[in-house]
Image (cartoon, rainbow, N blue to C red; front, side, top):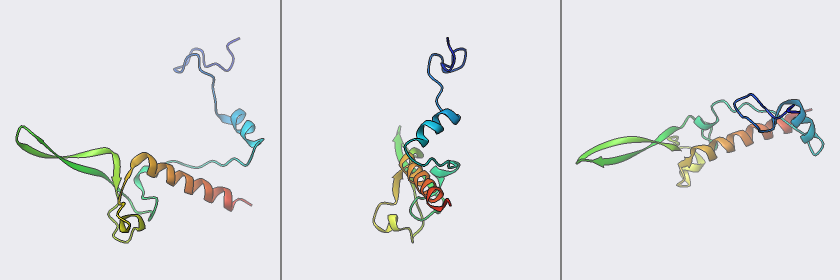
Length: 112
């Protein structure tokens, strides 16, 4: 039948993945940990200080305007190792992925 295929839901025809079944399948190959991804794109993964969206200046019809770039973030901490290396700007998704990696690794390594 249609069991497990998400028929009648917003993801029609796609297999449901997640929850206990997927976790049990992954546990056959190694440890599984859960981490909270809340605010991971808003914290610098090098110094753990809040970041801001990058800004750029655009000229339209002779008028200069400053806009936010939603795909990248800037760290303004002068002591940040990434900023000191000249890499204060980073992609928002890559920054979030690094933060999730750090959080997940700390959970797995601190488990008793």
